[in-house]
Amino acid sequence: MRNHVKTITAIDVGTTKVFTILAQLHASGDIKVLGHSSVPCTGLRKGNVEDLATTTSAVRASVAEVQKQTGRRIHSAYIGVTGAHVTFENKKYAFNSIGASGVITGEDLRSVSQRIMASSTNGGSPKDRRVLHAIPMEYSVDGEGGLRNPVGLHGSNVEVEAHLISGGFDYIQKLIKSVEDAGVDVEALVLQPLASALSVLTPKEREDGAIIVDIGGGTTDLVGFRRGHINYTGVVPVAGFQFTNDIVQAFGTTREAAEMAKLAYGSADLSPININEEITLPLEEKFTDEETDSITIQRRDFCQLIKERSLELTYIIKDMLEESQMAGYPIVLTGGGSQLPGFQRLFEMSFAGPVRVGAPNGHAQVPGDLKKPAYATGVGIMLWAATEGTRGVALSASRKYLGSEVGLTALFTAWSRQVKRLMPWAV
Image 1: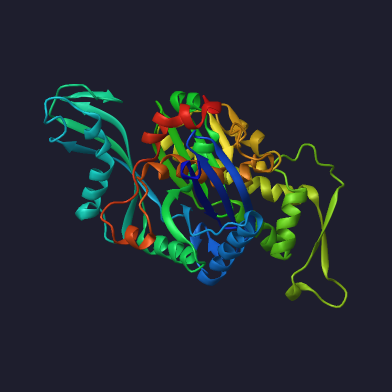
Image 2 (image 1 turned 30 degrees about the horizontal axis):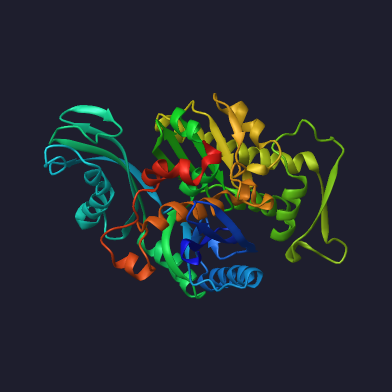
């Protein structure tokens, strides 16, 4: 029976924390979480590794805690990646060889992602970038477009519209090194907002159209779905770190105190706050003297600062969605920043469609303490590993990945075929 059980590890290396989750995947498709750990991390800025030693230390500590919980050695893991260096574009590719046998086969389509990534790497993209995912969206056969599954059709002039996701080579290399230096090999890289969508969206939301807004510590990541597939992704370099930094700059307090006050008193909605309520914050040492080591402020002033930054974020997202013709779709907020009081209401006032806060609540195998928006990415990486990783499509060790002409294969192609087997609770 042990031969039918696979152990998988997912690590979400974020701007404020490193989250590690160890799970068992059974042949039946059941996933059992064995252990998990979240450790503070200050080695990243806006999703990018800036302090290699600090990031490695956080990864090592998080992994060690899980190993202590479970009594199991972690040798390799699936790693999430995001940051302002990640870029996205929709492109069309022509494949005259598809359907050469007289009919388009499933084998023809299964090779599409790798062929697109190979062509993009071989002169199709700058050398300082690396393709992460190439996700087919729609097909055109002999001029007939809008096809989602052309298997069985006759035709030799096949075009594929694909969503191409790439990252900066140097940024990816730093991320991989920070994990490898902690003694963990990298099985594959998974785009963090795709992972969040995997753990939060329902099949109906993917089909009808929805936008994931994943508000993390360093970036806010966007993923847009329409007709069951991804056709938009984006990164906004505004997230929880910037909210905390605003408090530090405005009131001269320490970063630790600003973060604690944000969580305890912060809100993007001023209406329920008593006008006379006050907050006392410690001052940074450079602002103190013999008589003063703290500052007392009105809570409404404190929250007004948070509201203004929140409104800025909604304006940026709104502009991005309108430019990409994704405006008007329902929005699903997730990530740790989405739990800020008043945030959902602010989004509802700013956008035309409905807004909800999403967490991996529908996954029966996930422990209750992980059914929170802050863990959506980590749980999603685990689910990605359970689908794509076990099919052998994830490239193994990071050195092979960095030297390969082919990046990771499409996430949601296999997922759509396996969702009923692996995730019946989400149907």
